Every structure is written in C-alpha cells, then in structure tokens.
Length: 76
Image (tube, rainbow, N blue to C red; front, side):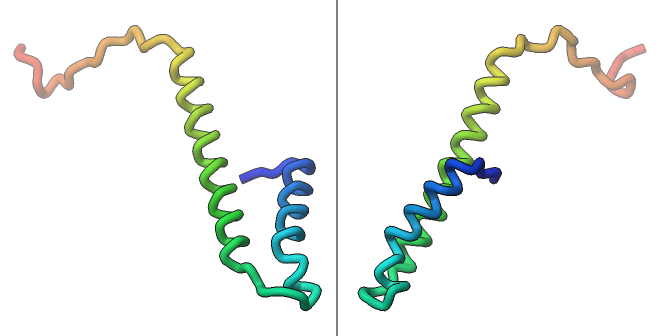
C-alpha cells in the first residue's frame, strides 16, 4: 500500500488524536482504535485496487482469438 504525503499526514493526525491523551499520560490506551484504523485503511486500499482492476477490465473488449484445442483432442 502506497501512501502519498497528504494521506500519511491525515493518518498521523488521526492516530495522534486517538492515542494522544494516552501518550500524554491522561486516559486509557486505545489499541483497539489503532487496530481498527489500520484494518480500515487496508480494507479501503483493497477495495480501491479491486475497483480499479474491474474498471480497467470493463474498458477492454473481449479477445477476438478463439480458444484452440490441443492437437491431442483433434480427430485427424
């Protein structure tokens, strides 16, 4: 998964907001929040890649080549 600078900064900001009070010693550690954030980012990246592949596949016409049978299965 590649992150550009803006998304990395947004992720760092969200992680700081979620875990900032715990790191400062005021509050409980929210490891579950961090795990959910990472899982959500991975799911979004996977869905975006799948969407991109499906979009590319729909733009290309089907192949005009006919499937050829192996000579083993042809009657001579």
